Every structure is written in C-alpha cells, then in structure tokens.
Length: 309
Image (cartoon, rainbow, N blue to C red; front, side, top):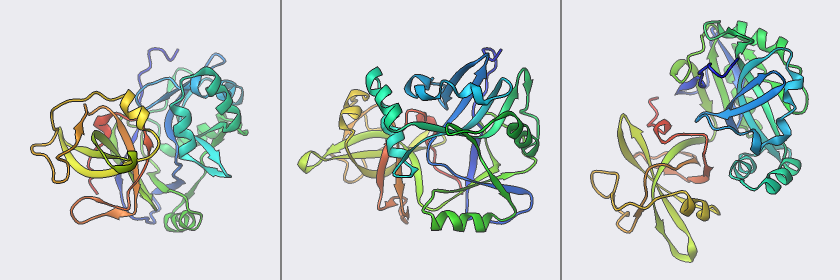
C-alpha cells in the first residue's frame, strides 16, 4: 500500500526565542533522530530523512505494529536513554553499528524508543492536507502507548513557560507549531519554529587537521544557496576511524581561498555530516565552546544550511 507513497519529513523553518501565541501549540524538542515509521500488514519500516532503513539497527522495535490500531505512516523521533535521560551519544553509537551481534547486544543494553508527533496517512487516506490539530486527534486514537512508543504531548499558548521548564530540566528546547498548519513534505516553513537552550547545528565536514597527541580538528562548512561557507573547526573525539573509513581525500579546497589556520588541512569530499553543540555564535560567524556531538547518517550535506533567523 505504501510502496508507491513518496513522503518526506516536514522541516523546521526558523529558530527564534520562546514566545506565546494562541495560534500555536508547543512541544518538547527531543534529542534524537527524526524518522518516518511505516506500519503496514503487521510489519514495521523505519526510515530516516535520507530514506535509509533503520529497523535492522533497532530490532527491538519490530513489534511496534502491535500498538497501532490501523495501518499508517507516523512522523516522530527515535532516541535512546542513558542514565535516565535521552542520550544522543548512545543513539549515535547505535546508528553506526553494522555487526549483527553488536546490534543485538546494544538493543538490550540501550533499547530505543519512538515518540510520534504527527501522522501522515491512515490506511490509504492522506492526511497531508489536514490541519495539524485534527491530525493530532487522529494520531491519539490510532496509537496505544507502551514503553516503546509514545505520543508527543503539547501545551497551548504557554510557550515561554514550557521553554523555561526545559531550561530548568536541562532539556534541548521546544518546537512551536501553527495549529492549522498543513503537512508540507520536505519543506521548511515558518509554521514550525524551534526555540532551543543549548544551540546545535549540522555541518558538512570538508576536511581535517592533525594535531598533537593524535587529536584531529574537523573543518566545517554550511551551504548558503549552492556555495559552501567556512564555519570554523571542532575537535573530533573517538570517531577518527569512522572519518577515515567514510571519507575520500581530495586536493581541492571547497572555498574560494584557504581560510587562515587551514593551510595544513587535508581536504575531503563534502559528503559527511556532523552535529556540533555550542553556547552561541561569535561575531565573526564562529562558535563559542563548540563540542562535536557525532556524525549524522540521517542528514544530507545539502540540509546543512546557514540558518536565516
């Protein structure tokens, strides 16, 4: 039924400070991987934003269809817990596993969960042109929650209060969504707005610089239209082998001229995507106290764009 259905996740359009507006609802922003979940004829198919199938990496979710009343396509967040909190690092480690035995062990040590915040199809019926709040009501009637799957809760009007709560609990932030918004596949619109505590962004990794004590500094970039803009460096942690295995060296610098401090860089093809968290942007466009969160197999380089605030 869904083999011929071509959908992709609707994207957050802008980022701004928390606000109150009666025309919006407000949800917690989860620090996981955005996925679409296809439930059909007693089978589960989980795909990231690039369309890659993920169920084989998270086999503990193969029975999730038992919690769904009617075949459907769900939009939501996949995540793992560590020390009682959502842990992106554990999720990232699991998403990079290839060995079946290690995948099975990880599924028992750090099992994944899924939170649905939208529903795109029920049986053959498309809900893409259905207003958000009505989709929410349909979603709540179609999902029976358990330890593996839950439904995203939301509040109305009190965006600032919810954001303040996320600050106190050291959570990532909130997402504001216009109540009457339709579902625009693959598009960024101002109908969905993120408000975050600790900032993080996705970058194209275009090179690296070897440092002392076997340390490596990644060279970062983002797209502005079709041009890659230099966005600074971040120190790589324990994933050097992944970088070497999945990158191709090139002699071509992707920028019009080599940025200062990058004279010794090893340039690689702009295929890999990494996520960096930081305190704030600096005046020259860099980042204050950047920390490398991990590689993102669920993101394409073209998605790494300079945010228009």
